[in-house]
Amino acid sequence: MYCQLCGQVMPLVEIAPAPVEDGAVEKRLASPDNPKRFVLGVAYPPDRADGHGEWMGRDELEKVAWDYVKKHRRVGWFHAGIEGHAEIVESYIWPEGAPDWVTKDLDGNDQRVYSGCWVLGAQLDEPGFEMVLSQKADGWSIDGVAKRRARPVPKGAN
Image (cartoon, rainbow, N blue to C red; front, side, top):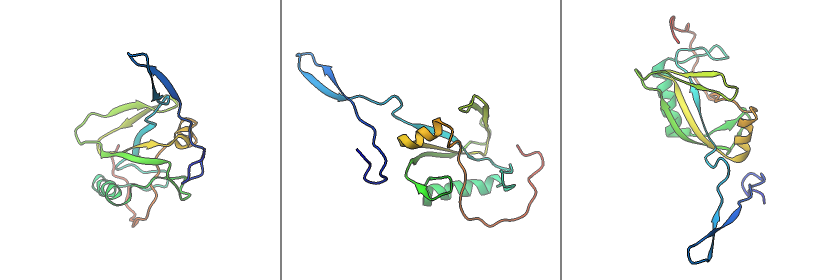
């Protein structure tokens, strides 16, 4: 069976019989191995240059994060106009004064979330989740329009 919206193959749903006290059989849906397909990661850190040499201060980043949640909430893939494989379910700025959170990525490397980081969480469909597990998609990348100002990254920034 194919998805009417995107044409992708839809996963099969297994129906498993479950015994009932009176001997009758009731049908229940069997949940998949990972029914949540949830991913969480830093969308953008404050005061740190990205791969393009661009950066945002904490106040600017907070405004961008709030604007995204209020007006946009779209997730594209590879800056190619492909959408529909992820739905944002969490968005927040790591609180000032909260301890850093060190977690592991898929390769087992430490990843640090510190105060001021914009964190996004999403539920992915099966094809999107498989891309993450196979590391073909491995992080958030901000795409949009902004006014560029030349300023040095603050000294002593994380």
